[in-house]
Image 1 (spheres, rainbow, N blue to C red):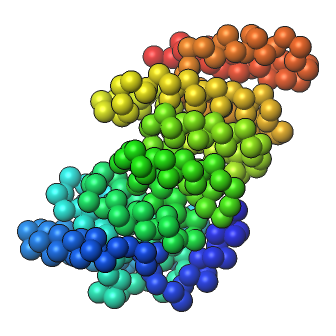
Image 2 (image 1 turned 90 degrees about the vertical axis):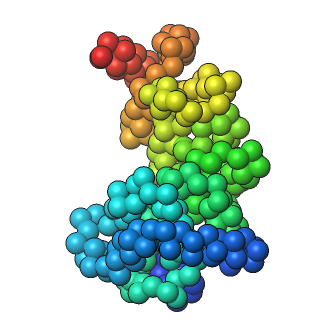
Length: 304
């Protein structure tokens, strides 16, 4: 998956900076007008984003992993500012105004980071940009950031689109699954559960479990307005059941450990009963794994 993403990213270097070619011209014009207004009110905010964009290659050379954590930098630099989403999306919509990075890894990190940070603002005015990226994008990290951003808005029609893309095998599925954990809606939870039944393995399985964990997190669901109140119980139950099914069917230790972590984070009160029921007729190897999981969940419940 990630090798394919890197290949598409290299090919992308000679094309438009971001995949917004399908953005409706009227929506683009509205965003441009809003950007101009926001810039007149908060010029320093827009200068901050411009400065980060201009130094993306320098930051890329200092990275410790595959990519520089551009999303975190951009979020921290614009947090709490009224026009943050517009300032962050200006390079996406009008890249010709900026000194864009030359290295492929810097471009990937910057593009995904801008979309990710804009999505963190939960500004519904930015939704058309995320929809355009999902419609025409091909690069994994850009698609993942757009899915995450759109998922945070949780608009019914967009949740349905994300659920369809997540459950449809194809070039966008892994990216959307990776971003869908931010969408705390029961339809999104059911989509992830459907993907879990497709028998994902390796990194795809781990990423699916991380999305289940993020979506069903007991801590996250307890925060105000994390999800519609009427859907919280179903989200938690659906994500926990999917993670448990993946634990039971996991083909290797790494995936099983990821599933155990997801179950610990989701903390379903029904998990001990599922474990006890599954032990009946389980192989010695699975029975031992279930015992270990039961002990781990018990310890987590005792930890304040």
